[in-house]
Image 1 (tube, one colour):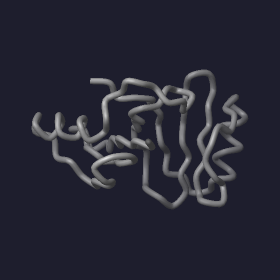
Image 2: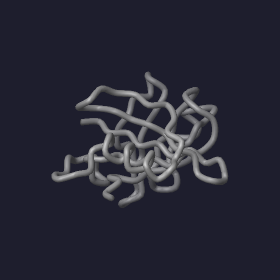
Image 3: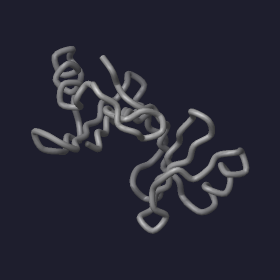
Image 4: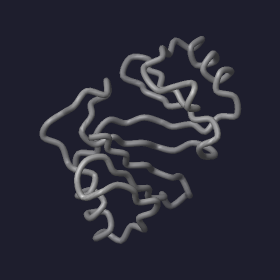
Length: 122
């Protein structure tokens, strides 16, 4: 099962302050929109997303169809296929969004309560 690009998404209180902190650690802006309350930062192959006011705490994120540089990969396992495989394995699927093709997402929660977002952009 190919999960796609991996990142850690962090719910932050002050986007500008958090962004400055991670830039001091060597991360560079990679995407996102400060005006929309989020930014994506990268240091080598490590990707983190900072999100103000969208969710609390940390979340693991997988982006099917993307590599670590947010470039398309083919072939890839579509997010809807991942969702069905996990549902068949007994996972509780939450926050389902999207149509039958194209962008879509869902969340599962690990045994310790950590949310895992599967977020396909294409």
